[in-house]
Image (cartoon, rainbow, N blue to C red; front, side, top):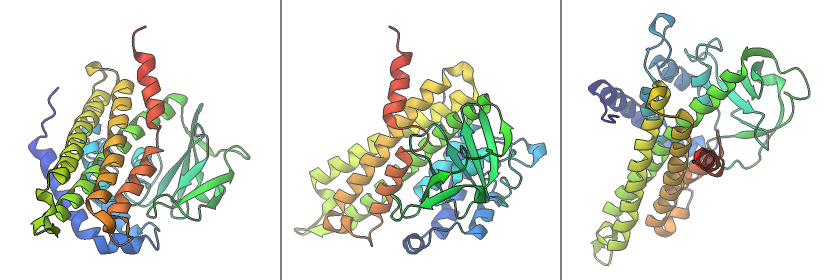
Length: 326
């Protein structure tokens, strides 16, 4: 399996990275913590770049690419800490009207989760409910939910669902049980890609600071202890990136292996890379790393949030254990 990016994939990656660096600047990320409402102008801009329609067929207005291309894009979105229900809207493209062109903001509620929460409900136009028996679509206003006063990630407001999919009709059925399983599989792969991006973004921030901060007359990046921290983070990122790409390629071509096993391995490694990388970023910044002004905490908090999405690491580890020969 060749994991080398093609020229087109590198161009796609570089173009999106340049756009996101200009759009989601550190100052804007800080200001967005006070108001995490999805900016519809930016949302449509992402759609116009083809983000949500990447894997849709070209006759349907998409780009006709595979999930392997999508995870490359989602890594960049994670690296820039772009807020919004990105995974749910991507999965809904071609199914929910307006999802692919940015006219709709789609969030997701998985009834398998022990605690029913939904992200960005105030900004969403639609909610897709994933149950054991299929997928259901309903207007966002149909859910009765209480916003969390202090969300884990200040850029991702979440609401605790108190009534909705179980208390009343779950809305229009838009998918079968197999479709719900596919959403969970693809969602885990895309979330893993976001985690790789979060890990890389935290590492980039830590490396920049290590090259600038001086102590005892030397930049701290020259100290062996700091070098070890950064090197360990780099190893985690590279390993997780390879695992995520393998998972996406396996989904695109199931003959290459078991997609479920590949995605579980990717989620475990990506969660570890993002959370450990976030802690490393805070540690390298020292006392400054714990302050609100430094972005290190946003990378760590986003990693903690994404850990809970589309299966936690222990759940995926259990899936891998069950697949082992007895």
